Length: 285
Ligand SMILES: [Zn+2]
Image 1: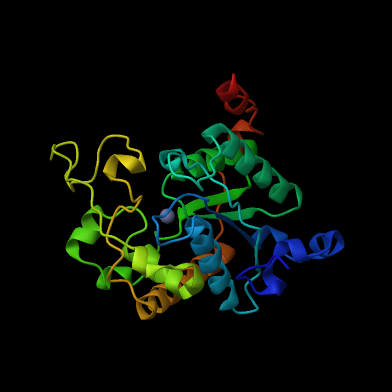
Image 2: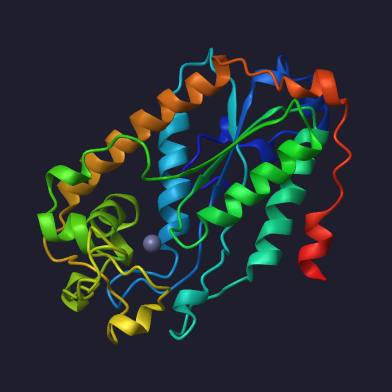
């Protein structure tokens, strides 16, 4: 079956339509959409890394929620906007417009089913802007829809305690933290004998980039032939277990807070229903 890391009873596609229709308190039930990518992650990791990590973290978070918190995972979006990796075989990419329309249409379906809280847990660093644009579009269409786009790694976790200063500063892709958590989530897919260290050069303008990370747009092959941007070599399974545990704890807490929070869209009272129809169509024009 297709529930992956999720407890089957918290996997929304396993419910029948009558079960979805009959769910109590749908307004405060949290629907979680993991969004990943299929893109090269160096010679030592599978292309599915970002999808495995966001879906895996969400599944582990849902597994530790108390029964009193209603929350369900959707099937993950496995394909993302991965154009910065398209020079490497195995990468599958959508363009930004296609991904934007996909997220908006999935969000519309969630809303139409009666839910009002959608949490997008995004595993790919190349597409947070698309998630934010989709969330804003859904908000414009529906004043009572709470859509939260957030990156998988943007909640408290312990990865930093294992990483070197250089790794924290410059690593971006297939480095220490991603390799370690993959050892925990899908150990058979990790091939450490092929791992290499590869850092980008520090960006030459301190004004444009105080932390030294590339301030200009880049593609992965700008930094060398391996596809790695960071140092996966110090990663261990034990670190990966601890990182996964901390991320799952934080996301379980975030889902609980999203379940209990109340958020009123105030301007609806003055403006009436928003008449927005615009930018999605325009952006394709
Ligand atoms: Zn990644």
